[in-house]
Length: 196
Figure 1 (cartoon, rainbow, N blue to C red):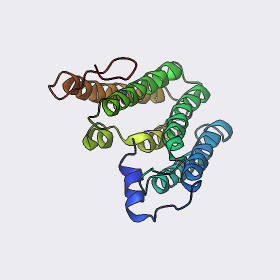
Figure 2: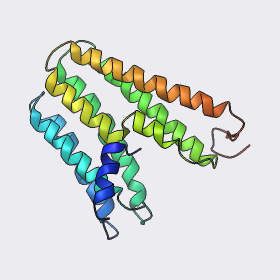
Figure 3: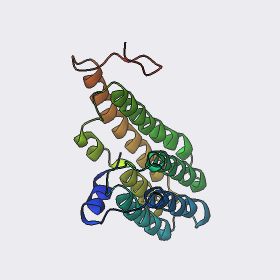
């Protein structure tokens, strides 16, 4: 679920070598981002700088195919970083209804990840690249929420922005998901992940 920002970094960055370097880069990026959301003053532009570090480390982590023994850890680390950052920034904002709006955004993104897993289990591959680019990728959404928190500090506009982002992501993801799953190329996959 790497978006255009991480892909741009990956295109110019050398691929990391070694068994632990790729998951270590992802974990370091996640710790920087979540740590900034938790411990820096809410609305700080340093949190936006941390998001920039997260984007760079995300791009480094995906600069080469994830085929190492521990590279399977990279996607869950990115998921956790995105979800936790969004929820922590909303909770620390003290803006009415920001937390429900953040949960709406996390739910829309979680559905996208669920849909992706079932497409891959069914043997049809990941969703189209245009979809991931359109919804920004994990690093783009995380950076955007950090920027919104800095720009809309303690304003009700933060809730409105989170809600609009949640609705936009949900609409794009749901329309593409429904289009795919009603098409003739969709596999029949049970809840256990086995083909019917």
